[in-house]
Image (cartoon, rainbow, N blue to C red):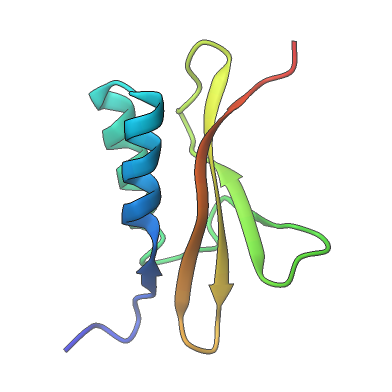
Length: 97
């Protein structure tokens, strides 16, 4: 029986695979982003913020993911009633120059 204290993650595996296939990050970055995603099981609100104008859309950057002026960001919907976190995207974001 699943732990009721944990959240259910949906779609993160698909978005991780897509990010890896598209951007070909190194293994250290893959491990870092994967560990961050897995931390959403315990607390999907940690280190992210709610996006104004969107119902339940949260986003944030993955700490320590900055490489060559680009960091990895993730957005997802949090459905508190069902304790479900549904991934919307995992993508690199370039810093302004």
